[in-house]
Amino acid sequence: MSTKNFDVNLTEGELLKPLLVLSLPIVLSQLMQVAYNLADTFWVGRLGQDAVSALSFSWPLVFLMISIGGGFTVAGTVLVAQNKGAGNHDRVDHIAGQTIAFVTAIAVAFSILGWFLTPTLLTLIGTTPGTQVHAYSVEYTRTIFLGVFFMFGFFIFQALLRGWGDTKTPMYLMAFGVVINVALDPFFILGFQDNPLFGYLGMRGLEAALFDTTGFNGFGVQGAAFATVLSRGVGAMVGFALLFSGRVGIHLSLDDLRLRAESVRKIIEIGAPTSVEQSTRALGITALTALVALAGTDAVAAFGIGNRLTSLVFLPALGLAQGTETVVGQNLGAEKTARAKRAVHLATGIIVAVLAVVGIVAYVFAEPITNVFISGEGAEAVVEIGGDYLRIVGPTFFGIGIFRIISGGFRGSGSTRVAMVLSILSLWVFRLPPAYALVEWYDMGSTGIWYGIALSNVLTAVVAVAWFLRGTWTESVVEPSKKPTVADD
Image (tube, rainbow, N blue to C red; front, side, top):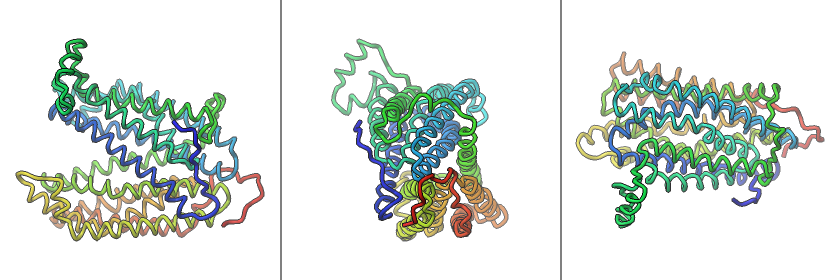
């Protein structure tokens, strides 16, 4: 791993280039995360439908765990960014250590609770005890819970470096982890018996020899969890080594890991609302899926395709929002409020322009785009419904872009409660009730749900802009810098 310091100067000079330089690696890291998930799904899929179903049942628990823990890492991003902007470098090291120690404590608690509660929770989600799917789900989920320290460790490293202004080092570490995971998956899952990889490479003879020597036929579904935990673990250990070495700007000491009540309170104050936001968003998407099910299985299939498309579409928005979070944090810490606001304006303009074009393309080519993702019997009905989804929701993509960027600005200032409220309003007030009314009261079927989604995209953007223009979010959460105040650029 290179020791070069990749942090970007965000408080002086031009703003557009550093904002994009900071955000692009985040987008690439998100794409690599998609590759990570696809590799697991592909190789587990060689085991059959029960194995794939096990991943589907496990995912809500894993996602909820990541949402809660990930929320507290946001506090690390915000506090590191603001303290760096304020020139409080000793506080940066302290906050980084406190974030690691606190989130690690949460990870240990999750490991213990998750191990014991997994069978019960999976049953509540819908698995049937005694079935192969339930057994696979329990094996996979328990293994992930046991390795949650490594998963959280990697997320902490990403968050702290992002606050410092370095998104390249986490990107390289993510790439390293993806390579490890992709390399381990086929062997950990399938072992040396009937492994398609050896067939692809024309090495069936080698496979037979390895099986004769080891007798290893893979860990099955649990192998995917082993590969994930191990690859994340390597990434976390390398990341922590870099933090303790000081080669990435932040320089930890063991004393920084001793929890202090005041610092923990600040982490909880900033991080808890983000944990609630991400958790309620996950529950809201689940509730929306259940509502779509009322419109029929074709609608569920179309909604699944639409979700996959929008997830890809919004990767740039997520990357730019997290970049904005850091820019706002550092500039508020440096007492450059006008520059922080300008960063939000600039990022909003970029994402509106990009998503407006994407929305037009989605509207014009709705059916052909949907058709790429499905074929075979029943495809025609799904393509028609999916086409309606893109024609109705596509033109409002810009609304979610605005919401994401402005929420990133709020989080960068430490106003995570505001971002939480906006997220809850978006799903639980502006989206689900109107969609339900259009389905149940006006009998509009899936079309009603699509209009409900489009309505929430627009209303959430309007409320976010109005709240942003109030300007009450710009008070930083760190003590003002002791240095002479520098005028805003």
